[in-house]
Image: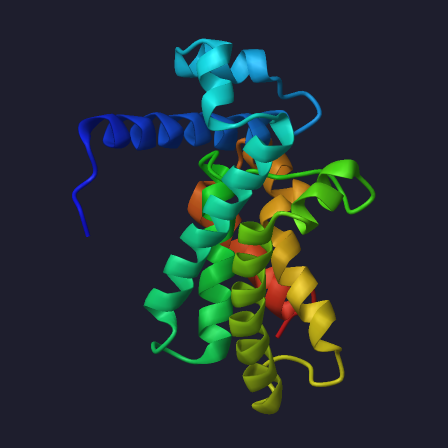
Length: 200
């Protein structure tokens, strides 16, 4: 492989900086309130330069969500051969909640939105989502076979519950209340996700 030119490296670095800002914006205010003007201003580039990288707000969102899936897959792969599938699921929820607390967990509107339709047509995102879903689906089935997760629950219910935890508003309410540390919040979300509210 040929070494990237200086111009190509600069382009890639600028693109990464753009997506860092989009990560933060989607985490703070969401897709509907985010604007291309705001992103360009926060990155410190012109709107015309921004459009050289991403020609729409939808593509910006798709790119940052694809990058999030890539980061998640990196975490999953690192832990794929460690601990039990159940422990790996708990690790992933803990990681995702911590990413949320630190402002690195972008979120998008519900399935009843045009951006969701755009995402489902964005091939890189769909491919990464399918890869992650396959891995987590295997972990869920294995945990159900050992009885660590209720085997009567459809695996889809468990999967969507895990996917929903980084977007859980409980995390934000606990953070805003100021009574708990980040570690305590992460532990509380993981515990209620996998053990419910009953005492054990």
